[in-house]
Image 1 (cartoon, rainbow, N blue to C red):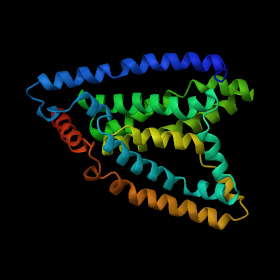
Image 2: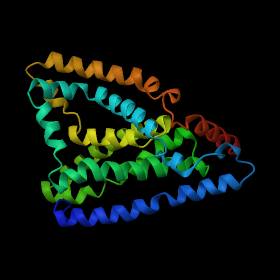
Image 3: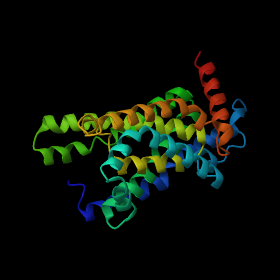
Length: 268
């Protein structure tokens, strides 16, 4: 089934709405179990909205600033290449005009629904059920996010006409979505708000995967490559400071650390 006809997209919007309407239920059940379990004191006071990362308006602002800023730093090379070619402003101006159902899907519905399901609902659930430590939840839950994009294989094979090309494309997409998932889950767990990962997801959909071949063949390659190096350095050095729980009023990081410690002690 093709994924781009408007009718198909509209039906998938309806399916996503139903899925998201129920996705929070397992997390709510896990919170209730912990609240009634005397051996699990660290979940006291954790509301469902806070666990889902939608409780604080101020937390939304700080999460978006930190997460989107880090994503922009990581994409500094591609951003500079677009700016040098005069394409930066037109690309984002075009994206801002949500004048088609395809843009609505790529820039609003997909980022919001996927981050809600895979970040806000799944990652805390793994922690609160004791199925994973904090580290494992951050590293493992994005794998489900990556696998959820595997259904694109049939569409890619139809477009390319070759199974090998479709497999190569889907493998690259799996790596890209999983790496982004690690970053988004880490940012969600640290900042405590899902709006940051949603904003970063939409930004990455506008940018697409970094085009390193464009950087290598760019007329001003030195500047573009330097921007890549600076951006990656800023991202790596700023990842922990920018997501410092002290800067984010929604953060439940310390509670997550305590729950993770309980899980490790229970399994040893």
